[in-house]
Length: 390
Image (tube, rainbow, N blue to C red; front, side):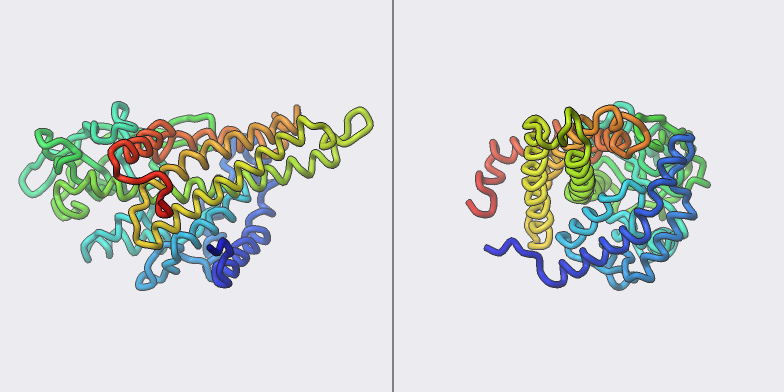
């Protein structure tokens, strides 16, 4: 059993690490200054400039097929890169990406939506969550009724990431209420903002915020159905599944950077004439953090590995998402405690991480939903104790 990275994986990871260190991390002091002044930390044109620099560096479309100009990297390599991105608190991501289910589009839709999104000319958002349907995604109510050659959408989506900036949305709507969303009664639509939906900013405890999307008799042509009618719920689950190893991969990068700060602080900060790192209480917080970080790292890499092996990744990804999200919350909490009062200020990024990572236990499947999936798989015999080594 070999736990080492391949030469290719190591080279790509190190190149990504070098780019983040050279081009992204230098922006961190300015980002904190802007956020203290209640301004956006990174403007869209600044993100675009960074992404174009990364493209010249060789990073464009991590998951995008080569036919569309992407790198089409294996899941394990993508996981390693997302960890590198997480090391900086600048809200950066590599360009050349599109929602994974957009590749299910037909040729005309690819020209109108997919390719411009990959090139950064258009911005999308994915809309399934509703005020009464969060974890219970099958309970969506936004309705689409046929009217001639069009569909008319009415209802609301909420907590939509990127919904304030998007110029089109992938909307999961109920098209046959008798069947129910899970059993072929929901359909995915590609809906331009110009068709009439509006977004409303939702203030959260984190920086920035998601959106509520309001649809009031929004008319969508039949040609804008993504995939087949009735396929909406399956496409939604495919979309959600992608985040269950990339989110905790990002969390590992945050935890590594935060723990490094704690270690540096513990060796330099003195109380009662000695470094605080000499105190057993501090040592135990550091030891527990490193142990949990290492455990999360391997759970996440195994989840990504199952994707690359063509295996069903849902069980492994749920464990990775559950543990990785909890781990980063615990690590950042300890790091803030080690920094004392300074950790609570906005002069350091620790309190920012504290607010940011709390979301990781909620979006793309709450802790409770991951536990439900993991327990159900075992109780119903869908998987065995010990996983692929059983």
